[in-house]
Length: 297
Image (cartoon, rainbow, N blue to C red; front, side):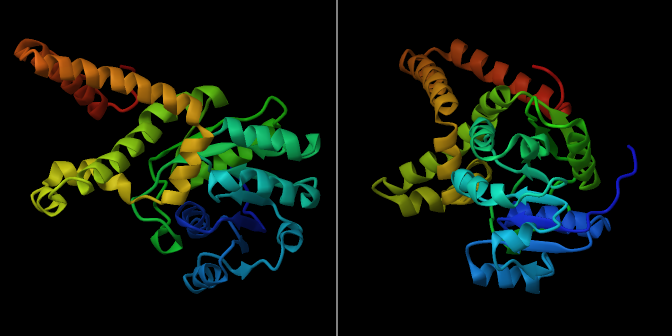
């Protein structure tokens, strides 16, 4: 990896788990001199200063972006259009913009609408596939991205220098960086991330609506705990993600319902052979993936 220089000024818009961890990772690596935070909650921003995640709370967007080397958009994806419109007039010629949104086609559409061609030359859409069940800046830590995947989905007009700069910064955070078309990213993440969150949220709501939710949860074991861990994720963030990627997510929900209906028929017909075969195939795929997560199924 070619040596990259430290950022003089990093701007984090949305100082929570994702933005805060990015800031901490770069600070720990000595790759940033000054970090400015932008956020809706003054209390949260002050807490970020106290934790040492950021150095300064921006009074406004214009002052935040002045002389910024990199702007990291880490707010909920539902705020993307609003933030793109706000930052567009204040981006300087050298400023690189990247984001952490879990959906990419909507982010790119917003960039095309609000950012100039010059700004889009320095715009590198990205998605760190990392997180935790707890949200907020208090959960941020510098090792969040260690050995995690980051997907970049650059525009055709995105400059190679900007892509390489963002790639190197993520690698410094410990991440493995890949490039992927935005539509492919959204389809893949609908299946592997967005659908599992829908299932976890739905299962918790289902059990809480039963006649005896206390007993249901009282005797829930480690499998249930592992399966529903992500139901503790930010409701606002996941509302926005699901709506932003609703077309791909609806396709995955329909496909999953077909699989579930197929299993239901096996149970209804007392078809032990078909059930065991379905479970065996699933176990084999899961075991192969677990041994080598980069292995193609």
